Picture 1 (cartoon, helix red, strand yellow):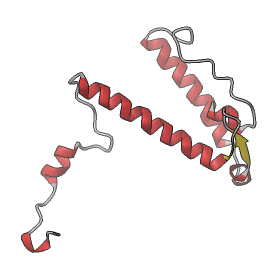
Picture 2 (cartoon, one colour; picture 1 turned 180 degrees about the horizontal axis):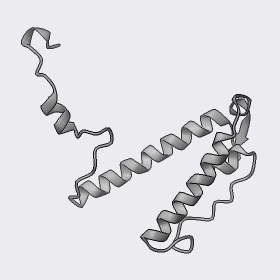
Picture 3 (tube, rainbow, N blue to C red; picture 1 turned 135 degrees about the vertical axis):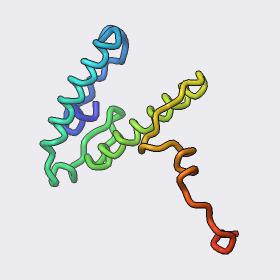
Length: 118
């Protein structure tokens, strides 16, 4: 959808059901194919393109650079949803930046009393 819009094309989003890809292997292959296509489109954008406006699926004009930032924010939103659901199910999630918060705390130096902020 984002790649369509930055090319000044309307969104042709048709949903996200099993009819697109069924089963883990097919879903991953489908994701990899569309990701590759999207990266190809995004990599051809110039500095001048990033300043142009495209239309969102709602028909709202938005600067392409801002639309691409919204893509990242959208991905972060979904990652958060996945982590919440996994937590509810009691499934440990992998750390995003290499360490869990508990590991960062364990490796961090405890502040001295004089350095603590009120």
